[in-house]
Structures are given as C-alpha cells and as structure tokens.
Length: 211
Picture 1 (cartoon, rainbow, N blue to C red):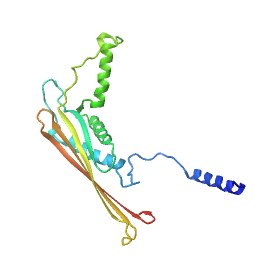
Picture 2 (picture 1 turned 90 degrees about the vertical axis):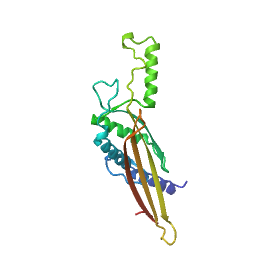
Picture 3 (picture 1 turned 30 degrees about the vertical axis):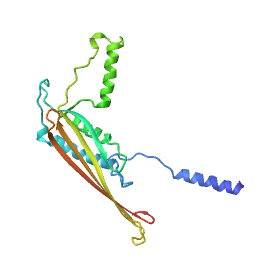
Picture 4 (picture 1 turned 45 degrees about the vertical axis):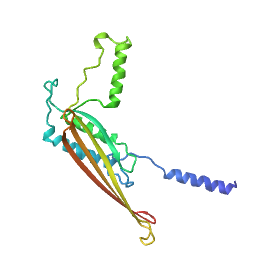
C-alpha cells in the first residue's frame, strides 16, 4: 500500500473511532428505535396487568385448609405463550409482574419450574450428603400449595403497505399487540380474573430512511 493510501486509511479509522460512544440512558424512557417489541412495551403491558390485579376485589383473599391466619392468595406463575411473529422472551413479562405484585404485599407466590428444580437439588443435598446439621435439614412435603395460577397469551397482528413506485418508495408498517392474562382457581378451574392490554405501533420509512 502506498504511503498516501495508508495515511488516508488510518485517518478514516481514527475518525470512525472518534464517532463511537457508549452511555447510560433512562430505563423508563420511551424506546422507539424500531417498531419491534421493546422495553417500553414490556413496561406498559406489565403495568396495566399489575394495576388490574391489585385492584380486583375478587383477589382480595382466598381461604383454604392449611393456610392459617394469612389468607392472601398464593399464586403459581405459569407461562405467557408467545403467538407473535417475533422472538420475545415472555418470561420477562411475568418476572416484572411478579416482582411488582410481591412489592405490593397483597399476594404470595410459590416457585415455578426452574425454582422447583433448584429446591429439589438442595433438599436432596441436605438429606443425603451428610454435611448438614440434622436439626436444620429440610425435607419434601412441606411446600405451600398454590391457590391460583397466572398464565396468558401475547399475540400480534402485523400489516405492511407501500414500497411501490406509486407510493414513492414509502413503506408503512402497523403492529398491534394483544396481551391477555388470566387467573384460574386450581381447585375448580374457574377463571377468577382476566384482563386484556393492547398496544399499537406504526412506522413510516421513506427512501432516505425512517420518517
């Protein structure tokens, strides 16, 4: 490579490096980088469900044998089925909902599948390793029984239009999200509570980028 070409290449690299930066932003700020499902959608859908759950008179208490004085509902959090066209980690939704409900102090929760596996490993260790004080060993058969299960569905409808010569190359996209969450009594299979949250996002992309 000639010296002049090398100098120009190095100068270009330095200029590109100077344009790169990393910084922290507000996690609660509205995120609109793309039309795809994002952090603001997660926060919005979760918040609507939490508000409805906490306010529901039907979820004020649940009495059953063995619960003692604490009549708060004991939840098992199931899955949110992803029926959208995107790859979405829906556990992020249930984690956010469960965290907010726990902070409200109104509900109790038992461990889901991942937690149960960890509990099982620890109980077997305490019982069989010979390393744990016998007076402190935990055993199976003492877990709380959940009163109700929370589970739901996240779906989307995508519409696209444009991109032709008639539209001047402009593309429009509309995405509608519907999140349905329900609370079902484990004994009776009766739906005690159900809520729906909706979002609509639109974008328009011109020849020279998004507008």
